[in-house]
Image 1 (cartoon, rainbow, N blue to C red):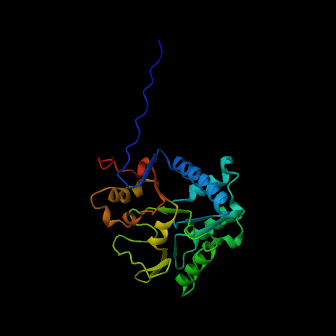
Image 2: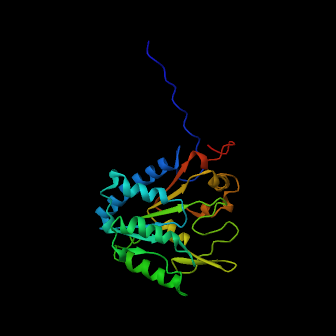
Length: 253
C-alpha cells in the first residue's frame, strides 16, 4: 500500500500590490531575490550592454549580497557591466556603502567607477547625484534611460528609502533625488518618480521586526505607508517575505 504524504500548506500571503512571494527563511528569500536579479541582469546586459541597480541602506540585503557572491549559480553575474546606485543615504553614516563596496564592488569585481554611493558630505549632494544618474543613464535610447532594478527594504513602521510615514512625500521638480530632514538628521532618497520608472522593484522584508510594517501595508490604512506610493509604470513590483515577516491574524489573503 502506497504511503500517503500530506503536503505542507502554503504560507498565507499578505494582501499587497504586485506579486508576493513568501519563503520560510531569510536565506530562502535571498535565494529567490538573487535568482530574479541574476536573470534580469543578464537580460538587461544583452539588451542594453549594461545593468543599473539601486540598493538600500540597512541590513535587509546583506544575506542577498553573500548569496550572489558565494552561490555557484551566480558565478556568471555580469559584474563588470553592472552599475550600483544608492536608494538612499544618511549624513555621517557610511556603513552600508562600505558593506556594498566590500561585498560586491571588490569581491564581485565591479569597476570602482561603476559604484555610485550618494555623496552625503557635499552640500549639493542632490544636484550631484541627479547629474550622475542622468549622465550614466543618458547613454541609452530615450525611454530606456531608467534604472533596471531597485531593491527596497521595509522598516517596522512601514518606512522605505528613508521616507517616513509621518512625513509627506515631496517631489522636488526635475530632481531625481530628494533631501529629507528629521530634526538635525539629513538623509537623501531617490524620488518616487525614479523608483516607479524602474523596470523591476523588489521589496524585501525578513524577520519578526518587519511584521508591523507589512501589517500596515496590507491593511485598510495602507495609504499611510510610503510603500503605497511604490507603483512601477511599465515595470514589475515584487515582494519577497519570509514567514516571520507576514501578519498572522487574518490580514493575509
